[in-house]
Structures are given as C-alpha cells and as structure tokens.
Length: 344
Image: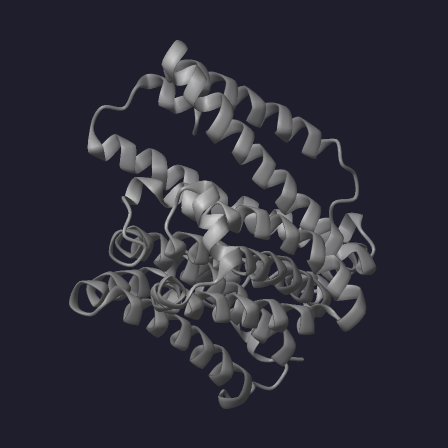
C-alpha cells in the first residue's frame, strides 16, 4: 500500500482508495498484534509487554515524523520516504514471520475440537461484542479504552480554538503548549505495569481514566485559575511564566497536560492488559477487533457533535461537557448496564 504511493496519485479518488487500503490492513494487523502478545509472554508480563510496544511506537513516530521526514522531504522529496518505508515494512514482515508459536496452544487445541462450519458475517462481527458484554471487567476496560480514543480525537478538534480563546495565543503554539502531555504519556507507560502489579490492571485502568477525566475538566478552568493568579499572585507560577516568557494561563495549561498524559498512558496499557487477561484465548482476536472498530467508528459522531457544540457555546463549557460526558458514560457502563450471560 505504501509502495503504491510511488505512482503519485493525483486524484482525490486515488488518495481515498489508498487510505482505505491502508486502514483496511490496519483493521487486521492491529487486533492480530494485540491478541498474539499472550502467545509469547507470560500473563504477569502483559502490561509491561504492551507498555514496551507503545513506547517503541511513540519513539518510532518521533524519529520518523518529527526528525527524519521533514529533513528528507526538504532535501529529496517524498518519493524516497515512500520507498524506504515500503522496504522497512517488508523487513518488519520478515522478522514477524521468524517468530515461532505465534498462536496460543489453547487456540490450536480448540480449533481441533470445533466444527468446520464457519460462522456467518453477522455472527463473526457480533461474537466479540457478546464476549465483552458477558465479562463485566473486560467490558469496562473496553469502554475506558474507547472513551480515551474518542476524547483524544475530540480534543484535537477543540484544542486550536481553546488555544486562541482561553490561553490567548496563536494556534501555531499549541504543539509547544501541550508538549508536556508527551512527557506525561511516557510516565504513564512506565507507571502502568507498576500499578498493575500493585492494584491489578482493572483498578489501574480506572485510576488512570479518572486522572485523565479530571485533567480534561481542569482545562475548562485553566483560564479562571490563570486570571486569579494574575490578580492575587502566586510566586512559583509567576516565576515560571517569566522564565519561559509566556502568560500564566499557558503555564497552567502546560501543567495540566502532564497528568492528562499520565492518565492516558495508564489507561492505554492497563485496559489492554485487562482485555488480554480476561479474554478467552480463542476470542482475543475478535475482542480486539471489536474494540478497534468501536474506537474508530463510534468516535465519528461525537467528534462532529463536539465541533458543532464548540461553535455554539464557550469553548471552556464544551471541554467541561466533554469531561462530564466521559465520566457519565464510564459510570453508566459500570453500574447502569445489564450484564449479558456468559456464552457457553
């Protein structure tokens, strides 16, 4: 799919087809990679293994998108990037093929016992949902992970307007203002396995989600906090703002970005480890496919709604409404939804 970019698609239809192809591949590769982790790691290392994968992914994106891509684009143009990336995918595929025993032995045994009759399309798509709904702990993890993905996408829509209206600086500076979230994310990826060992992965996911929601709600009040500090004075923040030559609301926003990143990192790892722990061996692929679909498809409508709301009401209220909605959905999923009976 990446190599096809070398043909320089100039029409919108061709670009859409390539993007569709890439995301279709991702719908297979992402659940497969997640569900294969238990085949090569013991259960007590699920969270640390998932954390290592996420850290590697973040570092690769940092090296590729932030460092090398801009340099290569300016010096050589886009074609070398397409060619090198395609080659790297082939190399990665070779390394994956050299890993033996990627299928859990329990799955192999059950495949020998089951009928050769294949389920229909609807049954295959609904199997992951039924498995999740019959396991309360796994369902909570899926809801938290999906809400995290949805909230992140919504924040991408709201943050430029927030930067201009609340922080009162150009939207071009939002990368600098929210860069502490990346540091918090790395801290969260480190903390998640530690918390999983101490309190268990389901509890760690709940703690991380609560921290993320509280931080998002804090963004709604950062402007008020900044104004109060400017009126009454608070030496540490005033000195920090003076040192970096930014306003106090900018400093408050940067400080709030750290716990938001920590919470996101903890949820991403702890929720995934919980799904691996709770899911039956033969159902992991379907469960992660369901989660992947939910995080992608179900996020579309809330993103559009959030964009419309931000045009009608104050951006601070829109962000507070986002935090309130996240908490409300998570609480309802935990206490309000009726649990389905576990399938035989």
